[in-house]
Length: 127
Image 1 (spheres, rainbow, N blue to C red):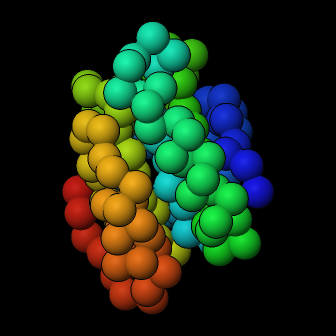
Image 2: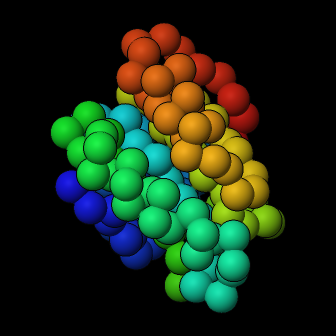
């Protein structure tokens, strides 16, 4: 499976209702997800891109890997207070997303996948 680029409408349908960010978090997906908030002009974001492609291929049947361009999806970025990029959300099926800011290594991404996404525990990191 490949990384999936989302528009604001697709984010609304596949991930969460960003129009009400203060409401209780409710994930709409049918498997855990990674959401990468990025911009095309951002060097660290460009470096993270191939890593996320590898992750999407390796874990394609288990998780979704989404990318949200903050320049094209300003409402989503504003709703979740994305002030630095890249920012990555690890969204389990139950509980709130884990938010990580900055360029993260492939090893850290895989650790989050195993510890947050592929376990059936509740995680309560604030968005």
